[in-house]
Length: 197
Image 1 (cartoon, helix red, strand yellow):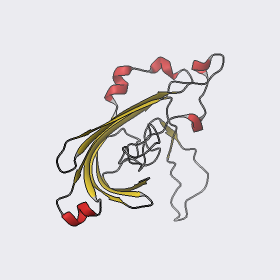
Image 2 (cartoon, rainbow, N blue to C red):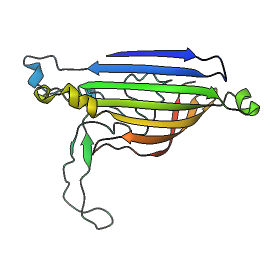
Image 3 (tube, rainbow, N blue to C red):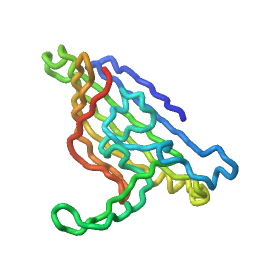
Image 4 (tube, rainbow, N blue to C red):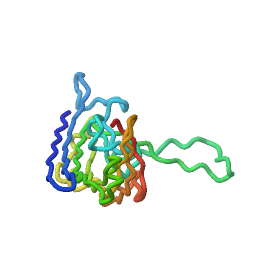
């Protein structure tokens, strides 16, 4: 796994461009490992509300998507019975994570025009995030296509306000889903995130 980040200050409005790229691959260590299964808890997951700029979580942030709401899925087993409201129980999907993960972000942060906001450290940002997961274990590497992996990248864009406090940093973001796959759990709208100051 690797994670590379950089920041370029612009010299006006306290603006800076933050960019980052992360990638990782995990495979089981065993004889015939390419046909073995990677434990679900060890796989990479994308999605969630972490700030891509201020988190040390590695390749997990993809704003606009539910935590672990991106990537390979399988139908959830149907539990016999009915739901509380009497309707038939409808199975959802389980997110399995991936053995290969790639994510990237670009974030332009800037001061807001009101002096009272600047004095409080409150500033704005505009961002783009993108990422993808693929399963390679259990023989799935045979079906892997770099071209298809590139074409199926999920992406979001948005703007937000950052409110720093002494205990944590609060982001209120409007996320717009640019691209998602059929079973991804992404939603255009307001999203709150908290990270270390």
